[in-house]
Length: 413
Image (cartoon, rainbow, N blue to C red):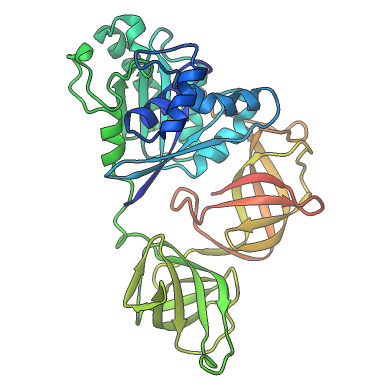
């Protein structure tokens, strides 16, 4: 089965925790002992006698009290698909968590309170979805039970959001009238919204297309480890282990080793200890090449006619994650999957307002949670695609040279 990674977003009390709890509960992904504990702790009970928000609210309470402000992850599966949910905090001071949680997600679920409609937080989270080039947006209009399941209110909020989506150029936006508290249109269709002809939320999540045609993807493979046993039985064995980031690799393919720009042929491919004819996206593999050349950890093996960029200078959008301020001339390590290089901030061009996407001039140092456009220079060439072309090879992180802390989330332009 494939895996769908999605993030929930919304303002405080829009029902994110209850929605996640409902998905886990109604898809029978809660163990009996968890259910018993829920029943004992529940104060705000629904018709099932449980408060489903408790499944994630413990972590949210910790974040809001300052113990941790990390993204909470929840896992569940159905017979059709596996799911990883990133439950991001909605507060503006946790913008960095929203961005890091969304950067790995293939879909965003934006919750809107049916009593309030589109508000500032709705626009902010939609702007972040636009910034991160999210291809699938779900607008879950929640608490329909508190507005008597009104079709008029649903259509009004849908019209409000369509204006936001058009301005931000969001595509593939789908709308659902739901009640996370009562379970309407989440796992089962609700008789109370007989005017709604669409699918349930879970049915949509199970069937939404997330994998592009692998034949059309640019093949990308980065070496994570060079396998060289040097034993009597495997004296001449030399394999390059890693994960196929995208595309398909076949035995006999002409490939180019980057950044060295050496052309060579694939002589053998192994996966799971067996020799195979081809490997595809997300598969771990060991690739062998015809000649003995110097290939190291972090090098890319790409199809000769579908090459990424190889440059020392790059433009990027950076979400600043550190309490220390960002200034021009600062030096960091940039980690791009398995490759780590030294980098310097050559120029900070402008700041991006996460409430409007407007560009504002730089008048002072960049502080925690701010998003900026920068120009970076690396000590040696970096192999990359733009973030819009490939999230996997278009993102990186900046690491402080002294503390080894991650200080910036990088989206390469």
